[in-house]
Amino acid sequence: MKLVLEIAYVHLVAKPKQTIVAMLGVTFGIGMFIALVGLMTGLNDFTEDVSMTSSPDIHIYNDITAERTSLLDEFNYAGFNVVHHQKPKNESAKLRNALQMVETIREDQRVYGAAPYIVSQVFYNYGPVQLNGQIFGVDILEESKLFDLQSKMKSGRMEELLSNQDGIIVGTGLARKLNAVPGDRVVITTPQGYTMSLKILGTFQMGLGALDNVRAYANIGTVQTILQENQTYITDINIKLKDRSLAKAMAADYQQMFSYKSEDWETANATFLTGVIIRNIITYAVSFTLLIVAGFGIYNILTMTIYNKMKDIAILKAMGFAGRDVRLIFLIQALVIGLIGSLAGLLIGFMLSVLISRAPFEGGDVVSLDHFPVNFDPLFYLIGIVFGVVTTTVAGLMPSRKAAVVDPIEIIRGQ
Image (cartoon, rainbow, N blue to C red):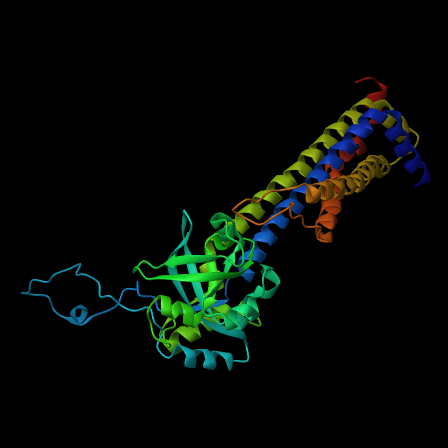
């Protein structure tokens, strides 16, 4: 074995440029794999975390757009003229007995919290600026319990909303577009024409422009006044669970129990989750392709090495080396190239990931980011070194088997 290792070492150092090129193929393949997977999964994790933390596990509401059966559906139309596409009834989005529903839900041991709220489309008017957005009427303490609003406050205190019926907390993007700061008063106008002046008490930042650029929070009573509704008017209930994986089954139970639309987070975010899966597939496909290409490079280099070392192989076999010894020599070369190249690739990948994570990034109105989010999961580094070594071993297996079956007589005769 010692002699086999010495011969493999001589082959590796005899042509250092060739050996270094093979190692660099593995190094950059694994380095790019680590950097690419870390960046893409980091972005996916960031957007998923922001989306999931800012959305409920279960959302209960009155779906007034759902198709409803009527007496005509059971009627025999024969001999009658039936009018279709009649004007829809102006139905209220109110949940009947909403507060009792909330108390019932909170008694469920699987539920972390439940919060009623009202939402209305409004126009925000501040000086010459007029923006379209949404105002949410909430119990601010329950809202914070579900979505950790306290940690997302950028200015002001959310508790001030409890003692200010004409107060409002706005998203940072909305405040920036209005050019307004805490203490300013903005005028909101509903689609029905009702107007009200509200004082900005603070700003929050969820992390997604789709929320921060349009959303504001007020007390439930304030929004009920804006909509000119009574104190029992509640349109939605948000629920957070102790175990999110139970959401689909529990949503179906609540829909049957309360006879209102109950939507789980997977259904609500189906498009986003599909995009995450597709991005992960593309990321891993491209990354593994880089490693396979590096493996083909090692295969070509070892094949050329065996072709150039045919006479040396013939002499070794004539001296008594078995075919498995010759095969082992070239397998050791492939393993050394793969192991050193993989370790160097891990280092390069880590350095690239650190540089990417420190690179400034301006998310603008889309997402609140100062730097690229990078995932430094040790699993990626384990996958990189294992796949790198396995790829190079497989790449060296076929050339080494070819070397093992070389007939020394034919080589020595020059055939």
